Structures are given as C-alpha cells and as structure tokens.
Image 1 (cartoon, one colour):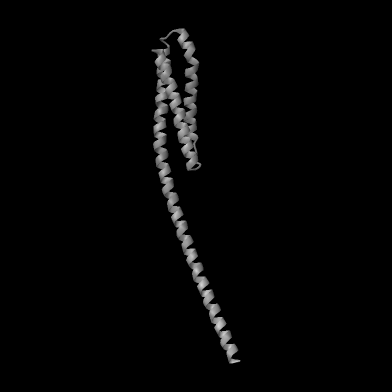
Image 2 (tube, one colour):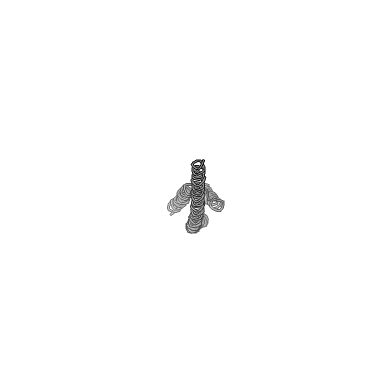
Length: 146
C-alpha cells in the first residue's frame, strides 16, 4: 500500500515537472515568435525606405529625360517650319508618334504601383529602355534635318 502511494506520488511529481517544462518551452517559443515578428517589421520598414528613396531618384531621372525629349520635340516642330515640304511631310508623323510615346511614358510613370522587387527591377529596365528609345529616335531625326 505504501509502495503504491510512493509510486502514485512519484508519478504525480514527474507529470507536474513535465507540464512545467512544456509550459516554459511554450513561453520561450512565444517570445521567439514575437522577436521574429519585430525583426520582420523592422526589415519591412527598412525595405520601404530604400524603395522610396530609389523611387524618388528614378522618377527624378526619367522625368528629366522625358522633359528633354519634350524639348527636342518642340525644337524640332519649330525647326520644321523652316524646312522643305517634303522633309516636313516625311518626318511630321514620326515626330507626332514619338510625342505620343513620350506622353504615354509620363502617364505610365505616374500610374506605376509597386508590386515587389522583381517587378520593380523589370519596370525600371523597361522604362529606361523606352525613354532612351524615344530620345535616340528624336536625336536621329533632328540630325537628319541638319
């Protein structure tokens, strides 16, 4: 009888120790999860700041290129008045097309919404390429005028 009590008391103590040990482990896991969430939030804030800084720099650079393209278009329109009718006819539609592309680029820039780092990098590459194509085409036409 006494042996059964000792066994029962021993089992109760062992069971109690197991529950206490599990509870401490759970609390540690909760603390670790809280730290992970806090670190993730800090990383997100840092990434947003980096993106915003990069976006402002990118937008400023391409706006300057678009403005330069617009100025070339205006200069070309003025210069076309002094050229021959055949030259004017030949390049007038091309200039109008490039002007429309320049306007579309401005609209695309203003409507851009961030959708992740990979899409952002793809957007930057394509957009810079499109702006450069318009600028190069304008310079080529302007050089032909002279």
